[in-house]
Image 1 (tube, rainbow over the protein chains, first blue to last red):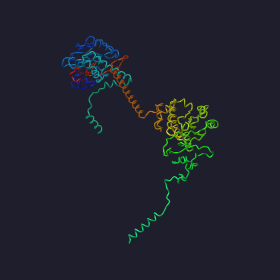
Image 2 (cartoon, rainbow over the protein chains, first blue to last red):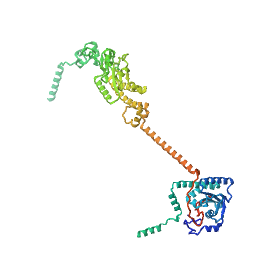
Image 3 (tube, chains in turn brown, yellow):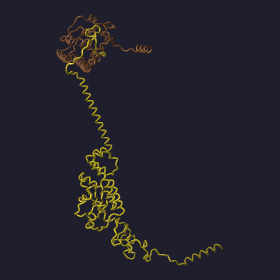
Image 4 (cartoon, chains in turn cyan, green):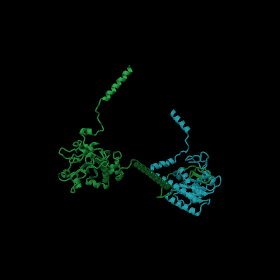
Length: 216
Length: 382
């Protein structure tokens, strides 16, 4: 896991980033501590036509039927300079409330696609549960798949492509998990919550430890 | 003194020589040749180069030149190359013309020998009972040495081959009796084994008949047997002498029968497997036999090079087909993978208790982004 602000690795249970000290409190200071209401396709930038929005909504309906736990939502906006998309995603998932989302679809199961029309960037923010199912590589591939549509200005189709691609990943993941036993699933979830840092390996301390072990 | 003595001596010797009267023979005189005969009188007059005038005059030893006869008085049969003089006497080699010059006469037709028709006892000898020998020549129309050679060859062939060959020799003026059916005779004699009966007319190979078993006849088309006959007749026509003709035709027939047997084996149902398993090309064959097989059984006589070319073509075709199939399957897989079609029933994931991070209740800040600005090359940040 990485800090939304400085992109440094963060511990799973860390209350704040070890590098920059960023936390939810800091984001609340920046964006506000109140709850905001979002629609599933929140077009703050007004770049989607009604027809595109309808098509996208019907596609999301289909996907939600297939995955009753998952929450699919999109935010299209023109972000001011200095506003980080990852920070916005972090804040929206923790402070946003999607209209029409059932109790079975909490924000931790959300897949939020954010489009910044100002910087021409697209991003995917994931809740805790979605994060455990979708890797960064899968997310990046989904974005790459939608790149042609984005370049052509077909934002509705691009968002739909991203969601469909991620659903393929979820489908594969679900098929794999069906084959696992209960114990294996418990072990997997425990592994996800382990208190480990995604730090790169450092060879020097390892060598030192080996030497020490040999000395002992 | 000495020169005078020498001249005197020479004069005396010369005078003695002239005085002596020696009788010398006169070669040009015809009166002294009456009692002289070339060869001491042992050669027939007809064989002498200059004997014709003497024979006409009847002054030479004509008794020696008479036609040789058998001890019983019948004329001796001679089957070699014969020429005939104008006077009707048989001669070998050159003959004298009317003007007394030696003239090369062109080879003339052999004398028609008065052979008896095949009837009565002779007919019984030919067709009365199955032959015990592979060469049926009761009239001894072939020379003894050649007959033995041909018999030995036919015996050897019969030991080695599934087809047996019987050669029946009759005279050129003789004919098979009308009431004799060779096919019927063949069936009576050789019904239990594959046999070819070759009826040869002396020095007339074109009249030769070949009689096969009925099952052999029915197994292959008529053109096959016509081809065999043609090849045998061609071999027979290569020489003029009857024994040589029989020998050559028998050898050619033996070769052709070998290939006929191969052809029959190839025509059968089992033989297709045999022909595929065996290699025909390693076997020795006459130049004509392969043509025969090539015409009627091309599948067993493919050239090695053409077979290799065909196998290469088939291999290339199979490889291409496999590549096309793999490409097609790959394209289908890619197409299916490209489809973001989500089907089937709802998928429920097992829930677990997440551990919060950075104080976030629902999200810990997991984020992936990409730029879709056409001028921006840095696309990935997380």
